[in-house]
Image (tube, rainbow, N blue to C red):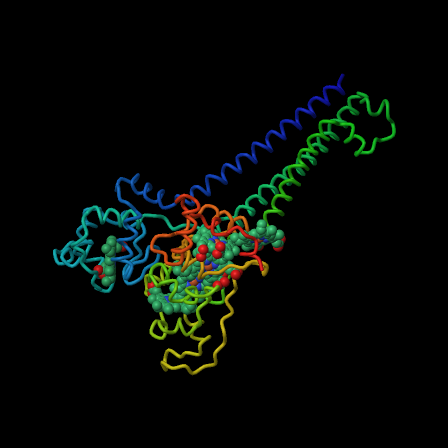
Length: 453
Ligand code: HEC
Ligand code: HEC
Ligand code: HEC
Ligand code: HEC
Ligand code: HEC
Ligand code: HEC
């Protein structure tokens, strides 16, 4: 009787524990989802947060205004020419802030005690007047300055640029690890419970069935096999685990999507192609007529960088705050590599080539031609490489698998509009096909020989 009871409570314990484990992992996964959600919608949250505090500004617009007007003198979390502006709304009354930002000199001249004190504290340096800003503009800016400093996540996010694949496996591994740990702890606890119960039984003079029927101790694996429920649970667990690893293994074969190696010089496409709006083809010039897009030589960089030794202060601040990169040091690396001396304005040192790490790389068996796609096909770089002008660190955006090439060839219509390359062939083919739109596949874009040597 007692033995049966003991067994039932053990079962109940196991089932309850498993339930706890799975609900724990479910919660973890959910948390995962919300955090990644939260990250992608960070700017939206930032907009909402100050709205709650009653100001009703739009932080995203505020950020743009701040960068255009204030960033040359102010940073959010560090003093610069002027004080750090984070939480400035807590230091001053809103009406006061409107007046101050629109015309601080006037406010100081009017003898406002708060303004005069501030002015003196900052060595009587003058802040520009901004009469053009409306109160709602200023609300936007203040909403932005009220956004709390992103903690730690900034670092994760820069590393996670590659679509988060690395990050995901990381969290998956963490969850798996935690599960394993919990299981081990469970086993230990079960053993402890078991021995304690046995000791109790012995102390109370209750004979358990094991001792009656099998005086010799049954090996643990035999007990395990006899317990069908345990066998079932472990089998399911093993299956799930191996499926997970096999899937992970298969997915990593030859697919380098998201690959973002650390380059010898931190070169930001965001700053060059995005903020400074330099044409892709200015640097990747061979893309027009050759198979390769090519990486620019350092001469191309020096066309500009002979006279750009330092980035703007706001850019510098952004680099340190958002990416933890000292942009000016990176430009010094460029000078070192080209032997340029900024002081003497001449090439004096030795040249040492920069070894950029190649990111996109098809296997030798495949043939891909840039000019054909960019010039003849009229496809934007971004279709295949993603929003490069927003990438602080370059990464592989597309999978670059055969399926990816083929899908696009099947789905993309040939851009015939004013396209001299196709005049002849278009006439011929459309006669044959009754004027239907042509896909690349119709041109022979699915023939093995076109892509394989
Ligand atoms: C030319 C540099 C400069 C620019 C541009 C500038 N500020 Fe200032 N700001 C200062 C200085 C310097 C102070 C400190 C007070 C003083 O010396 O006048 C200051 C003070 C402030 C303060 C008070 C801070 C505190 O801690 O009490 C606020 C708010 C402020 N600025 C907002 C702005 C906003 C918003 C913009 C952009 C629209 C802006 N500033 C643009 C230089 C500048
Ligand atoms: C000022 C010069 C410059 C401009 C402008 C520029 N790039 Fe680049 N690009 C580089 C350099 C240098 C590298 C190598 C370093 C790196 O990968 O970050 C590079 C690397 C790349 C790579 C990865 C190459 C590899 O290793 O596989 C791609 C793709 C790319 N650029 C696309 C673009 C696109 C698209 C644009 C326009 C939106 C653009 N680039 C604008 C200089 C430039
Ligand atoms: C058409 C002009 C131009 C060319 C060409 C150019 N740059 Fe720049 N670069 C700039 C400007 C402008 C800035 C500073 C932007 C700022 O201050 O906000 C800059 C900033 C930088 C920085 C600091 C920010 C960062 O990206 O890390 C580095 C490093 C840099 N350039 C390297 C290079 C290299 C390497 C090349 C050649 C592949 C190159 N630049 C080509 C204009 C250029
Ligand atoms: C149809 C898709 C597609 C388009 C459009 C495209 N690329 Fe590429 N790009 C690729 C592939 C695929 C590779 C890998 C090529 C290889 O390994 O041979 C690549 C590689 C590169 C590289 C690495 C060096 C090289 O030449 O192999 C650079 C740089 C690059 N692309 C820049 C650009 C720029 C700049 C544009 C726009 C003017 C552009 N790409 C448009 C698919 C594309
Ligand atoms: C974004 C869509 C897109 C992707 C992705 C793409 N292509 Fe293309 N491809 C085109 C277009 C559009 C043309 C038509 C240009 C032409 O016919 O000259 C083309 C033409 C070609 C041709 C010439 C076909 C013919 O009949 O002349 C080859 C070869 C080719 N692509 C190879 C590749 C390879 C290899 C990949 C993958 C690494 C790839 N393409 C990925 C859109 C794409
Ligand atoms: C539009 C271009 C394109 C066409 C058409 C094409 N392939 Fe491919 N194929 C590729 C690319 C790109 C790769 C490399 C993919 C990778 O690295 O993951 C590849 C890879 C392969 C591989 C795998 C090689 C390996 O390393 O495992 C085989 C096999 C293959 N192709 C056979 C064919 C056959 C057979 C055909 C004709 C029915 C064909 N391909 C048509 C672009 C093409």
